[in-house]
Amino acid sequence: MRSDTTRRATTWIRSLALTASGLAFLGFALNVLYGRFAPMLGLDPGLRLARVPEFLLLFASATFFVIAALAAERLAGGRAPVTQPQTPEEEGRHENKQGATR
Image 1 (cartoon, one colour):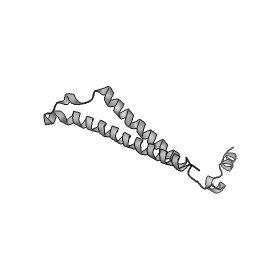
Image 2 (cartoon, helix red, strand yellow):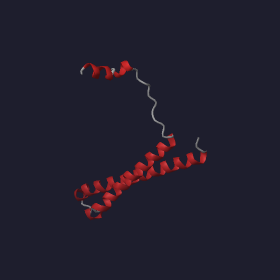
Image 3 (cartoon, rainbow, N blue to C red):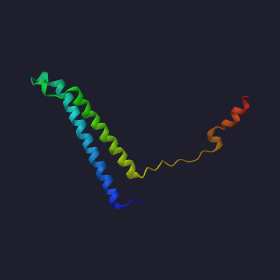
Image 4 (cartoon, helix red, strand yellow):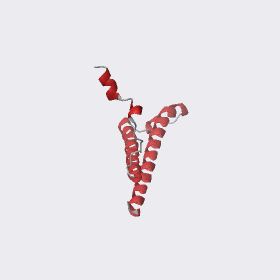
């Protein structure tokens, strides 16, 4: 069982990474919208980010989102979902079907 300190640290990392991901994506989306609507509103479209910084902002958003997902998975303990074992009737008895066709 994990200690309470480890659980708090993982929760803090998850929250921080998810917030950073949301802010980076918000910055990306605002940059795209500003570039689209600035000429229509008579604003200077030269204030938007270039292609490479725009890509890096989107990349940072995706990276922080993955970090948040991994922290959430660690917090959950990485347990696989529990499934019920299937009986041979539910599986369709594949070995019998293969033997019958030979």
